[in-house]
Image (cartoon, rainbow, N blue to C red; front, side, top):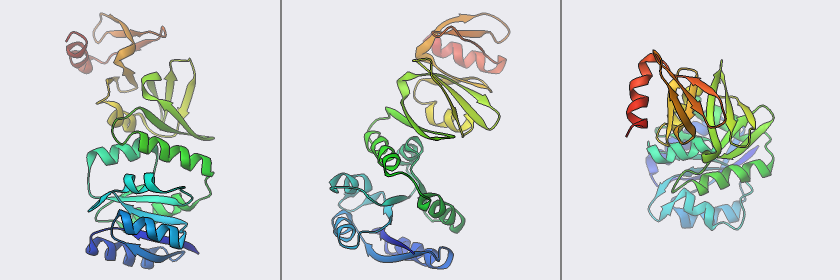
Length: 244
């Protein structure tokens, strides 16, 4: 049986989550509840849970604040959040599990299953470090590869290329990483960080564009020597960025 703790300031959300856990996650036993950062820390130290459902925004701080105040983190975490674009982006970058309010039972079951699978504590701590480092600005991203999670600096990514349901990342040090997510997901994550979807199969870091080659759509030469095709419908958007 998994020993769990809910840290959530809204009584209605807390009660709903508890009922869903009881109904859909019979292997999870909620041993205590807390309503803010202070009581959350106290309950964690007292009950030593295996899993914590952690709200992002609370009256006396955030879930991030709570984690930073703990002497050690030796439990799994599922964040529970109202829709906050920055917070959701932080979770995606760190590969930490999260649920949106109101919590969907199917999402709850999937998150519990994923989170409670055996994960090396080193990997969990690395994920949390990326999450906390990124809570003010995004510098690193967690890339789920076939043999684990790889953590890289965003500024070191030259480009990404679609490989069916996977994505190949090409880094500054010439390393290649095959990631078990689609290019569309990384387009959504990185498009506001100087990356551009030049083609349905290519996402490029504009900082590494060396030359534009004219053509119907044309192409760009990246600093690693790669030539990336630009689709005709994305050419105008790319040129407006490069020339401004």
